[in-house]
Image (cartoon, rainbow, N blue to C red):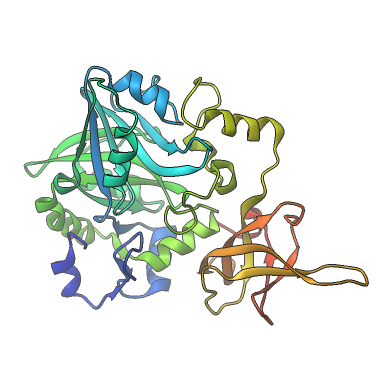
Length: 357
């Protein structure tokens, strides 16, 4: 449930489906929200995200040997995407991790904090490591748009972090406010974290300063245009990191960690069975799970199942529908056409350069 539910109820919003990454589908108008997020600035309600802290004398050494992404090199105020992988190298959890005083703070996908705590706890054998769910203590907003750096800095009367994944904490009207310079939908943006009681006041201040509230429809459109996979939508525990283009969330140089051998072998020898790609699609919605079918050549021609759709959205930049889909190897060339399910609609592989962003 959104921490801004009372504010949203007073507006003419459309609620997102249960379990969606964002709680609001549309605030007012999808074209207006998209234009603000790409030419001005917009705010997204991310208050359903979770948080967990990791503290203790052994926390650094523990995380180095467990997590896939860099940990040792993080100084206070720095951060990055990170993952917990299975022993078979598949993604169990994807999260943002920040180095804070005395430990680390992780921002997690909605509903996944207890699972991440349990997943890490199973590797603890008496080490001094404390894993604590902080979701009730923090609420988040994302800010996106080319005018965001100037207008957000002016509103907060503060310099903003200039390096991706770096963060700074300021006092905002009596509440600690953490500002993280973070990719949002694959574009430069910011994440704001504050006490939940202060979130409505912060949202209202941003809106009053000209930021346009935007919902899941625009979030999906921009992230799909930038080929950004979303946990719980395009990514689950059946996916290898490279299949979902998660190269920024794991390290090939930090040494051993859970799943490292598999990840390194894929990087060295290739052999991925599938990869998440961007495809041109019909303007009408395509359901997640729709199969990508292609007819083989020759006298024994048959229709083969060669992939699956995970996200459909409308691209305002390309002026047509697009999908993110996992496509099997040997069928990933630009321009390859697939039948969607039983047809007659089709989807065609694009490159990111074919969708203006």
